[in-house]
Image 1 (cartoon, rainbow, N blue to C red):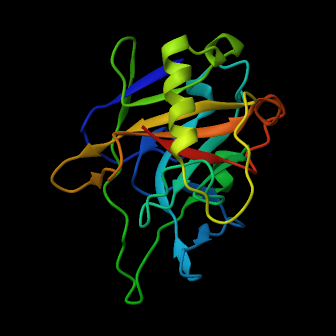
Image 2 (image 1 turned 120 degrees about the horizontal axis):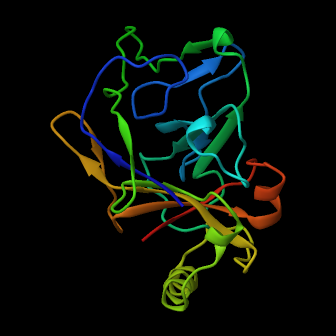
Amino acid sequence: MKNFIISGEKREFAVGETRMFGSPDAPEYFDWPVTTSRYGDDVDMTFIAQINCKDLESELLPKEGILYFFYNAAEQPATPNVKGAAKVFWFNENEDNLATLRLVDEDGNDLSPDAIELIESCDDYDVSLVLDSGDLEFEDDAEDEFEDEFDESEDDGEEFNVSDDMVVFASFKAYEDETVSFSFEKGEELCFLINKKALEEKDFSDIRVLIV
């Protein structure tokens, strides 16, 4: 695994630099992702982090480009049965082709919290991503914990079978300070799940979540 801790330092970041919160540096053709609420309305997704793949040195994840993580933080879906609860994008663009994409209200006011620095960690972590196939093997007790969560999950009306082919490839712990609130009603850690084959193929089109 590649682990990071949130330093708490809020500063100006270079385009494409790894960070939590703030606003993503995205290609000009990228539109801010939305999802459908349980009431059928469009909901702007919350930008969680951008991770420059050069900071990962992973055999499973892309070696170049940037991974962008979004979540429906307004409703906080907590089980993998809810499709569209989270989205991950990967763009491998020249940094000259990236621009900071800000989410604003009707008056043009920036709705994004301050961006916060991530620092590589060998021990404790706030953010963790898989690096190689060895990371996909869970300890027995951890596997049982995930299975229990799956068994207790409630779906959103669609059939979805959680199988051994689903793995956690990124996780984000809750974080709060005087300007940022990233917490969950049903747990302390947001896990991004993906099919093993899709991960190998760098296909992030169907991402599921689990809060533990």
